[in-house]
Image (cartoon, rainbow, N blue to C red):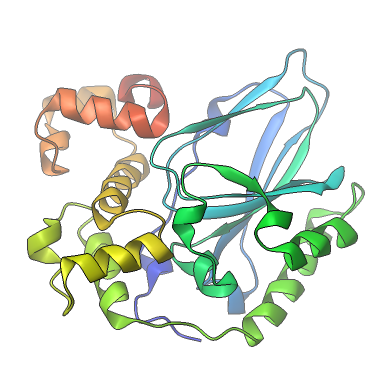
Length: 271
């Protein structure tokens, strides 16, 4: 299978908040098998190395992706989190071991034939969305698996699933996505995304395969591009990078950033 836009090369979603969190919590991203890398951005692991003194709040920033995740100590608790247009906070216990699968934009609906808008801005028990995958996770994972065994089990499952999947490779959608990604989200939706279909048709495709409009997706791509750049607060002020990123002014930038991240840019970048 080859999608017409090379999303992986153009888009690398960042989840930075755990790196600033409490001691005793680690976050790790693992590449899937080569045959899955156009579909799955990474597998991830969020775990405690020791019981924490307080419950842990895990903040997920907006990244344009859909994730499956589960508690390795209780794999019957498995969920899917849809496209979110703002940050989400998960209150966790003081001891946990979560494993997740982060799908690149459009890939979860491609594989599972699920309308992404049905999952947008929320998470749902996986059994209610993709029952076969929920049962597989419940039956094949347990607390004493190593990260290598977890990766191998997930690789084998998704490679088999992929071999039976027929993709809707709509060039009009993927050309629009590629334009947004190459422009780091700084686009005029009506002028720049003229890919041969009406705005109404394009909106329908984005909502089904992404989970929201092209405009919202572009905003998140723009936000993610700033996260990868890791600017200091000083450089944001002095160089007016928010203008280069297509924001009207600093107040507009700060408001949108806080909506996607949960804190101001100054706090996020630690300066």
